[in-house]
Image (cartoon, rainbow, N blue to C red; front, side, top):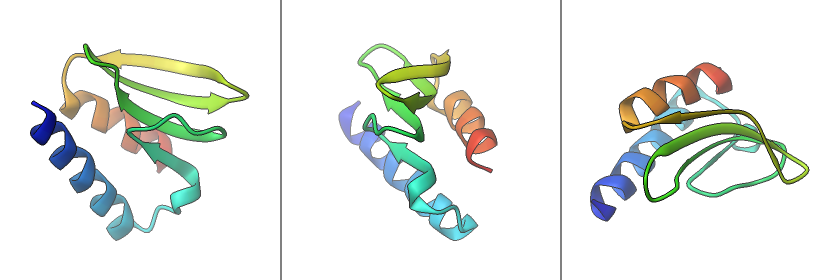
Length: 76
């Protein structure tokens, strides 16, 4: 599972580069302030906007595919 997760996140990062989304808009796999974040918390995928240590507009997903769709909507 860990290798699949890492591969999926790496592919997402490459896709964002191709789309021209500035790196300062998002964070993949790590919580960073003032960014749209996508992380796997060990049980589920979570997409949210991080601001001042808070997870705003948090959405949870059981699949990476669904989380990725939400994440791409938010960063686009």
